[in-house]
Image 1 (spheres, each protein chain N blue to C red):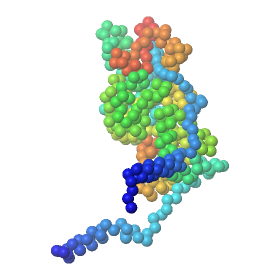
Image 2 (image 1 turned 60 degrees about the vertical axis):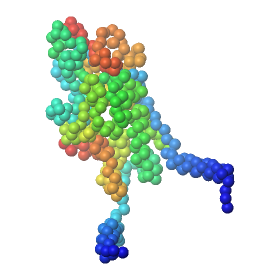
Image 3 (image 1 turned 180 degrees about the vertical axis):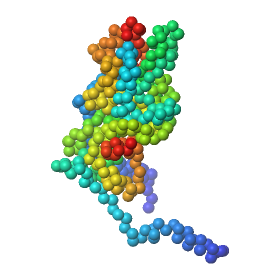
Image 4 (image 1 turned 45 degrees about the vertical axis):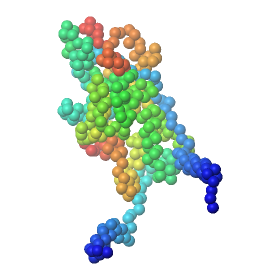
Length: 135
Length: 263
C-alpha cells in the first residue's frame, strides 16, 4: 500500500470523529422522560383516565389528534365515543389541555426526549392563564 | 436439484398468499379501537347556511363596530395597525367597491357613502376551494366554506382566487397583536391564510353566529334550503343583491339595500 502511514492516520482521525457521539455519551444516563399528571384538574378526577387507555395514548396520541382534527373540522363531528363508551367533546384546547395544563412537565417531557417539536402551541393555547397574562 | 417452472410458480403463489394473510393480521392489530365520531345533538343543522345583511338596519357607527368587535374578540383576530398586514373576518367598504357592477353616479348619496358589512360569502361554488393545492380549504356539508389551518401552506392561491377579498394572510406572528385573548379559541400562526368561519364553533353548540346575535336584526342567519327559514322569508319579500353574482361563485350572503324611504 502506498502512503500507508497517511491513510492509516486519516482513518484513525475519521473513526475518532465518527464515533465521538458514542464515547462522549458513554456511561452517562439521560434522564428518562417523566410526564407529570399532577395538574389540579386531574387530581380532582375520581377516575384518572384519559379518553383512551394509557398504553394507547402513549403510542398513538398523534394519530388520535389527527383523527379528531379531521372529524371536527372537516365532518363537523365534534363528539368522540371512545372504546370504553365514554363520550368526549373533541377539542385540543378545551379538552386535552384542560386536564394536561402542564405543558412543560407533560408534553415537553417526552417531546424533548425524542427531539420532536410539534407546532400545536403556535395556535392552541396550552393554559388559559398564560393566554391572558401574555399581553 | 432442479425445479420446474410450474412448481416454482405454485410455490411463489402460495407464499404470496401467506404474506398477504400475515399483513392483514398486522393491519388488523394496528387498527384503532372501536370508536365512533358523532355530531353534537345540540348543534344547529342546515343544508345550506346563508346570511342576509339588512343594510337599512345599520345606521350609526356603533352598529358596525358592535358586529366587527365581537367577531374579532371571540376569534382572536389580530390588529396589526396597518392595512398592508390587516387580517379581516368581517369589515366594511363602500358601495362602489362592494358592488362595482351596480355602481352608478345617480344612486342616492346615502347608498354611495354608506359602509357595507362584508364577510366571507361562503360561496356555493367557491373558487378558493378549487385552487387550494392542499385541500386546506373545503366546503362542508352545510355549505360553510371552512379552512383547516393545520394544512394551510400559505401559498395564497385562495386569496388570488377569491373575488371578494375575504381572505387575509398572516405575514407576521399574530399573537402579540391580539388585544383581548379569548382562551377558548385558537389563534392562527405566521404563514397561514384565514377568514370568517360562519362561527362554525358556535353552531356546533347550538348558538347563532356572534355577529348575528349582536346585530339587532341587521344580520339574519338561516338555512337557505328551508323555505320556512328566516332568510328565505326575508329574501322572498325584499329585493336583494349578491356581491359580483355574475362571476358565478353563487355567494350565500345577500344584501338588502333599500332606499331612503325604507330606512
